[in-house]
Length: 168
Image 1 (tube, rainbow, N blue to C red):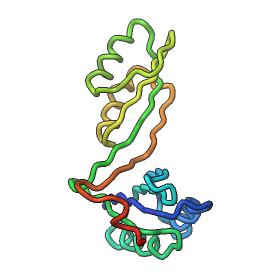
Image 2: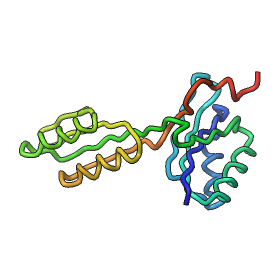
Image 3: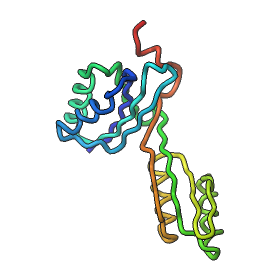
């Protein structure tokens, strides 16, 4: 199975998220990660979708997406040719005896402590999925109470902007 990150420029209109995600569900494709937000042009949103499949399935996903009325452009975020990141917030049990060890792990990963309570810490970390997975693995002995991930997002490297993909 191959992993593909699609950066999809869409019209910023009501229902576009439903139409794109519906395309995946109607055809039985799984979305591993989905993020969406407005771009520097308020009329356009960028959806970042992570999907797995063989070459035929990923090609079919691309072909079906481009047929959608709201889709302006699809950019494949290839490793080495793009920068992708994910954000995680982790609430971990942190009694006094474990607190320094947890803070040390956070420091190694350049994570931020964003909330301190008597028995827990909330830690914020941004990075690759592999970095976040490694961080979580190191925190497991300290009891992860809650965890949330934003999903992957990214841009292609180098010069270029949204105007390269839209017609005037």
